[in-house]
Amino acid sequence: MISNGFLRAHQCVGLAPGAQLIVTGAVHGNETAGTRGIRRVLAEIDGGEVEIVRGRVTFVPVCNPLAYNHVRRMGERNLNRRLQPSATPQDYEDRVAGALCPLLAAHEVLLDLHSFRSPGRPFVMRGPADNRGALEPFAFEAAEARLAMHAGPNRVVEGWMSAYAAGVARRRSRALTPGAVHEDPSYGVGTTEYMRAQGGYGITLECGQHDDPRAPDVAYTAIRQTLALLGLAELPLAPPAAPFECLALSEVVDRHAEGDRFVKAWTSFDPLAAGELIAVRADGSEVHAAQAGYIVFPDVSALPGHEWFYLAQASSRPL
Ligand SMILES: [Zn+2]
Image (cartoon, rainbow, N blue to C red):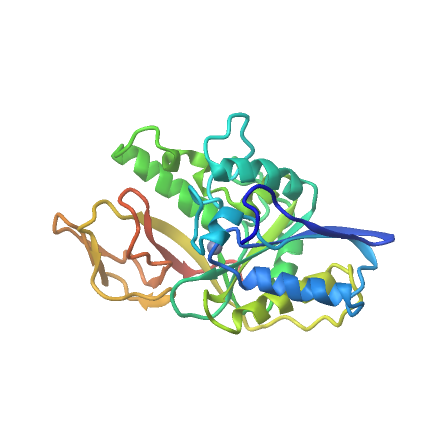
């Protein structure tokens, strides 16, 4: 057990100026590949094998101690949604956000380490193209792309905020639970989205299946690559993992009722043909793929009114 009552951050400040990096693990408590990867790098720093020569790096091995202690995704809610400081914290994750958000905002670059439930290979989630829109204005596409390219995996997913904004609009139109937090337009804001809103950039690295023994190695390699890429440590930089498979989330589909069911045991990134039957709702209506693409993050245990699965297509923005 670790304490539920505080976040522990480990910080190294180089003696020459440089980038300000933060590396986070266990934002979801049962996703410990990042925690283990961070601890391995910290041990190398302690042993003198890795030296932080410029800039600053902060490691937060466990961002959600309550969820981590229970070996589950959430404490009282999903820390990686509606992430923002609150003057009137309502739950445990609000209090964590009050500690974590200022830490994130004090850095320029975020490497956020996660893992996933179903089998599959690691992938990276990156942010939008440079834009001055209202949803997620951004100006560091090129730097973020370099980070994504060197993280290790060759599968890259984008489109989180735009898919969420569309999903939230649909939820509000259904008005299942008016005013509920998951109908808030900021519901899609997690660590990387918060970082971009604060003038930084970052990627989410999904290191593999939760219990895959290789997942901590994926996290470890990505941390060292990031230290090398940003020049914080004089480590060898491996080349990009090209060719890249770049996908864009196009839609998030909610589960409406307990009786809504998938027609098969989908795994993330299973291909879908145009018109293919994905699921049948409790009322008998069928959910088909509007166009060819992939199913992503299918969640058989999604709560009614919450995200059930995502649809993705090939991205028009290759790395
Ligand atoms: Zn996660």
